[in-house]
Length: 226
Image (cartoon, rainbow, N blue to C red; front, side, top):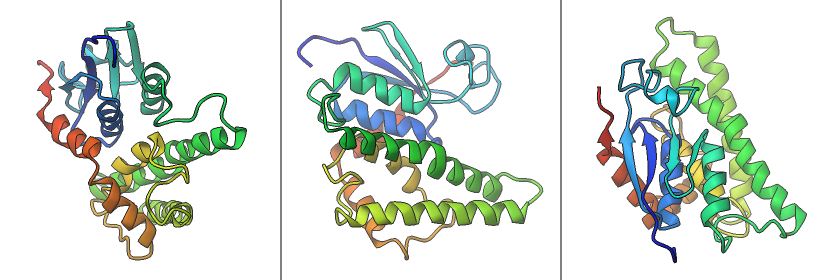
């Protein structure tokens, strides 16, 4: 950036997918940022505790504070949109508002597919698989099937690019949205055998410098005080 910026503050938890997409974009935009790590509970250093809920009333990470503008953003889609509008002035990772209407719709629809379908289905699958004390097998089966259905939709799109990027125009914030979720498929005990283009895309994205930096930096963040 031409102007000297104060570091943005990313609130995160290293076990949650959504903060990583924010860190990837911060890295891609070469923005200075620091990280504060919160616990997933209602303690004073937890996301449901009194300190964090003053930042995000919903008590979930990520949240972002930008001292350069005074903006506080939460919900990963809103955070990425804010960063793109504010700092991606060359439209490197998102389309210009004057772009072809289909280009604008394609960018939006894949992000909405992630935040409304693949992400929630995947999250529910992980919860019923690892954290459900009652072992609801019907729910587990449903969310596994729905996650695989979403993978098939993604596979069809990635086939158009040979797995290089989700949008045919190239690497974008759409890839940043999807990668932190899809990359942990093994934690959900899922297989990529039927999705070769998704598998190739994962191999390509994980080698990017912005992605590697994000996954290195978040676990090293400063712990929120108790």
